[in-house]
Length: 377
Ligand code: SAH
Figure 1 (cartoon, rainbow, N blue to C red):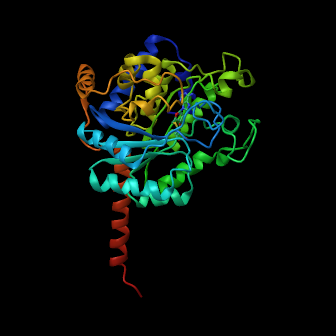
Figure 2 (tube, rainbow, N blue to C red):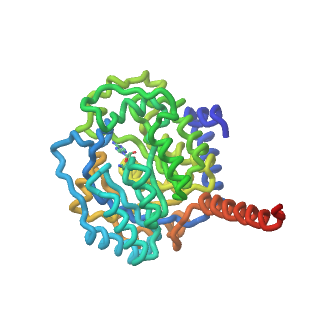
Figure 3 (cartoon, rainbow, N blue to C red):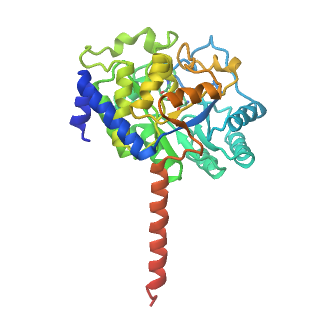
């Protein structure tokens, strides 16, 4: 699928045409990743953050929000819940928090990997190459880092660099300078299963930007793709002074449920073997219907929140962050059964990752056997 076709779909509004897109995405999902819906237990381990992303309610400048960092035993209790409920993976997510030291996280990963059969996904923001490597060595399986938008100018505006004091407008000139695109390539080289995604409907985001984002999913050959609508948080500069990024309405991508479903469907078509969640933000915006349609339009993952409720409401990246289904396993199973789907029974590794690993293994075997058969002179 090329840029023009993607752009046409993003601008398409005729229900009969869109029905064809939903059907293609659902069929591809069924053929490539099957009927299972993998369940990932989400643990929001810390709400401390040193960054000042313009859209995010956890940004450092927000002084009115009490912050927390879970203890190792609190996290291990959540991990145990994931095991008890039969999930295959835990996702450790946080703000960008230097208080989560590399050694502490490495020890935690070591414990989860030695005491449970779970896969571990990290989503801890932009960390150094050494830290990411140390965590991979400690046993982390996957890393999830959204590039948020591939438009380097828009990215620069919304993500002031760490050392910048004011909220001044920043620019970076090309994609190679996009810090997250660079990090994602590094994560791949370290052998992580790699996930990324974007925000949909960020003020200042054009249809062309979003089409380019989807092409980046394919260029990065992503194993996991998580996308969600931008939900304005009143305590952030983007909600307060969005006028500075205002585009004429015909250029601005709407932060709508339908647009999010389109991006899920297109992500499924450009990366057929990727794991794609119906995200919390989609559930917050569209309720159960947001998830239901998400799963019928390309998605194959749900991420039930395991963070203890007292902390959960403090991890306030956007307001009203409540999931449409309560935590009970039976409710979730009934919801999936109504869609003709099954809860995943395994770790739910991405078939894309497994294929890449097996290609790598067999090319190594060929290289080895060639070097054995070629006589050395
Ligand atoms: N610090 C980690 C995790 C951030 S929270 C990181 O930077 O990767 C996870 C995701 O929440 C972010 O990647 C962002 O896409 C999303 N998010 C943040 N603010 C949001 C908002 N106002 N509306 C919708 N999604 C938001």
